[in-house]
Amino acid sequence: MKVVYAPTEDQMDKIEELVQHMFTEVFPDYFSDEEIIGFQRDHVLALNDPADQIGTLKAGYQIISSLQTIISILETDSRNRDLHYANLFEFNKFTLEQYGLHFPFSYSRFAEKRTDSFSIFKKAYNRLLV
Image (cartoon, one colour):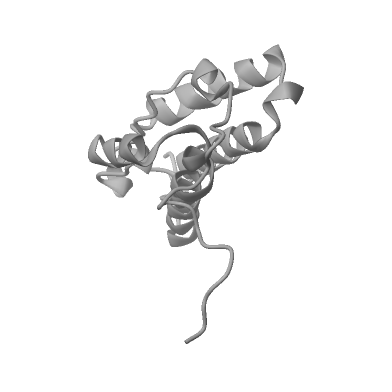
């Protein structure tokens, strides 16, 4: 008999949190608002049926660690990245795609940050109290 553990609600929440981080903190540094809207329309990093896509506890952890690794790589200054980072990126991209998360980017697409990082997707750094 084989025992398989389903992903936890906490794992599902963490995956959603990491995907939101990609859209609000990482993507605006590399893509225009129009491109990001297109990514949402194309279901980039979307979980259509989380129970089927993730399936097991192990899969949930693999998705979380892959998202965290990609985020960490992309938030590292591109001048400090080497071939090791590119290989890690591609490995984790492959892992995400194995579990049905659409991530159609190559490492080279993140070689240089945009100079105008103003975006409707970025979180506000402060709030105006009225």
